Structures are given as C-alpha cells and as structure tokens.
Image (cartoon, rainbow, N blue to C red; front, side, top):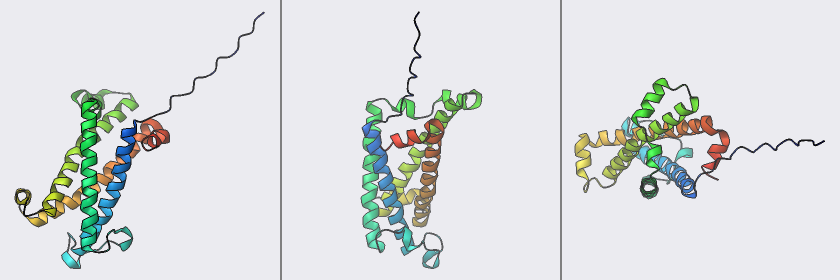
Length: 201
C-alpha cells in the first residue's frame, strides 16, 4: 500500500524589475526632490502669484539658501532629470518596451468594456505614462526658456509673456506630484507593496 505525499505549493512569483528601471526610478525621485525644493527657493525670491508681497513657502521646503543657490541646484537637477529621461527613453525604444508603456486604441476600448480589474489598471498605467510625457517635456522646455531667455527667446514668444512662462512652469509641479501619487497607487493596486519595492530594490 502506497501513500501519496502532498505536493508542495509553488511559491508565487516575486515581482522583479530590470536594474536599469531601478536606477531610472531612483534618479527620478532624487532629481524631482532637488528640483522641487530648489524651485520653491527660486519662487520665494519673486513669487509667481502676488509678486514680492505674495505668499512664500516655509524655509523647511527650500534648497539653496538664496536665489542664486536655488538656481544652481535647480538647473543641475534639471540636467540630471532630462538626461535620465533621455537615456531611459532610448532604452525602452531599443528594447521595444514602449509598445507596452503607452496607451493604444485597444486600451481605450478596454476601459469601456473590460471587466478584468487588472486589465483596467494596466490601461490606466499606460494612459498616465502617455499623458505625463508631454507634461515633462513642457516643464523642461519652459525651464530652459527661463534659464536662457536671450538664447531661447522664441519659447517666451510662443506663450506671449514672461509671466505666462513662469505660471506654466510652476503649474507642472503639482501635475507631476499628482502623477507620482497616481502611479504609486496603481502599482499598489496591481502588485501591492512588493511591486513598489521591486521598483527600487
């Protein structure tokens, strides 16, 4: 008489991201924190809304110590951020990962008809990726326009005024923060804390 032994349950596959994806996320987080805090330092020198008498951000959220220091930090972080986006863009293009990153016609149909919650989450992820790209490019372009207004006067000309350029550049900050929160929330919905952890470790 033989007795059957219960088969061992296979462990669920742990999420794992490519090393380059982890580097990309770390550099992005660091660059964004540096740009936001140094950008608020620049803002405080001459607030976008209300002029010098307008509302100022507390020193706790500032980087640079004064206007020139904030500008040095801000533009150094901007180049780090822009180059990070550039190499990662080349990476997903060469590896053809872009086909799974951005929204397509089938994704838009899935939002309306699919009853699979994970499928809908992935669609929202692709939609967020697609929307944030022009926002980031706009932030970089408007930042360059303020950094070198003489050389890139045509950027100011497109928007009509220096103040419009400042307002546009400042408006990209809350949009990017909302994207980061939404992106993280979608990651939690799709794979829980383990998926978020795999993006960095």
